[in-house]
Amino acid sequence: MYRPHQARESLIVMMEEQVEEGRREMQECERVKAKVKEQLEEIEREGHEVERRDRDGGNGKKDDDVRNVTSTAGAIAD
View 1: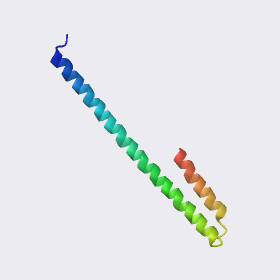
View 2: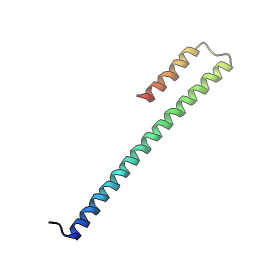
View 3: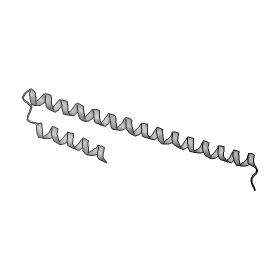
View 4: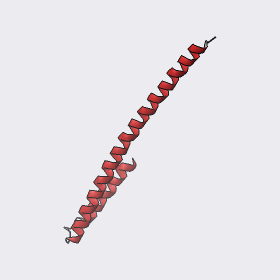
């Protein structure tokens, strides 16, 4: 049978483990957030490039540009 101080120590250890697990999960969320932000910025840059080309008369590669943006967006979904 546990004595009160043993139960208290066991509870402290369990709570410390939960806090550490929460920290690891937050770090993983931050990593994923940074990756998504980077990919969204890349899509935005590609979109601006397509718009610029269209404004400037294009170079006959509009369909290729749209496919590139679409394939990048698809990579994010994966």
